[in-house]
Amino acid sequence: MSLCKGRSMFLPIGLLCLGSAHRAAAQAALGRFLAPSNESLAPKTFARKECSENPGCAGLGGDCCPAGTGMALACCWDAQTHPAALPDSRALAMVPSCDHLNVGFPNCGDAVKCEGEYSESGSTRTLKATSDHCAYVTFKTGLSLDQVLQLDADTFITPGTCSRQDNLAFWFFQTIGTGVAEEEPTSHWDAFSEVDLFETYIGPGGVNSINTNFAATGLHMQWKNFTIVGGMRQHITMWQDVENAAGCPATRQAGMLTGLTTIEYGTPLPVVSVFAAHCAPGAPCCTRDSCKQLQSDPNTARACITVKDAPVLLSLSNWGAGHRVT
Image (cartoon, rainbow, N blue to C red; front, side, top):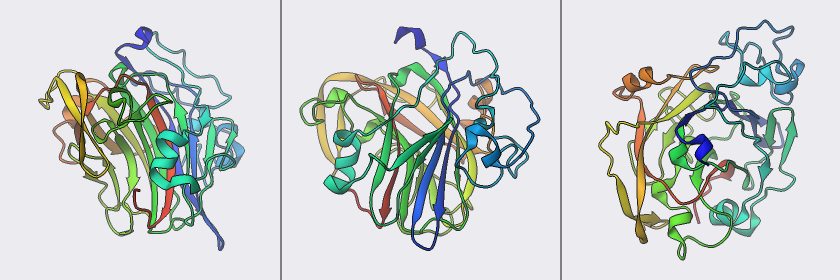
């Protein structure tokens, strides 16, 4: 893990809903590589703009290379030549997994679906989920949160395809694969250690029904003028405020479980200050010094997140229409 200590990384990710007369579905295109956040992809002209005509974007609908904004999504570079990685970059395989113990069961019980709900094509990871049941897929990173200086993701919802009741999210927390939080709180989920980079509010479906939040701490931020049913295409940048301008405590002695139950760690755990912003897709919202300027922007979400003795676990999920946490 020391090889990645204090690194900046770029993670191209997309989230999209598809609908038909019979079902609504959630898809996600997940990049198989990380590149430094201060290194942009080299300009390139693609033969066809349609997602289906570019191997890395296969399975996505509409235009990708470039998208309607005029900017190419990160998946357009799959099977192409990427810029040489700088020494402070680290690749993530983004291999799908099903963490039933830490993600599936706590949110939806035994009825939750994972195996058979996702597919892989190039850098695309597709999560198929109707509004009638819960579905998810997880991705192990092997990285401690304090090792990540910056994380970037392209996210999108196709307009008119999702139910206003769908609870879609791209999020992460920190956990090991065995044991339970009540007995091993330093290495499992609690609400002070979760970051929801992108989530749809359950039910409203109206204006500002998409948000970035932190489960039980920090300043949550609604995405103004974006909705579940209206769709969106945005980039998310999360970065660590290493100078701690937000004044986060150095450590925490306790966390919070579901139902506002406090749990003592038994030992102080470090805390990091993180910020998250969204912007036009295709490139980071900021890099290094420019991120400091965004920290004072009223639309930037922020929180003090506990660093667990466990790696970051990423998840894509659709908990279905009208879902309530169990």
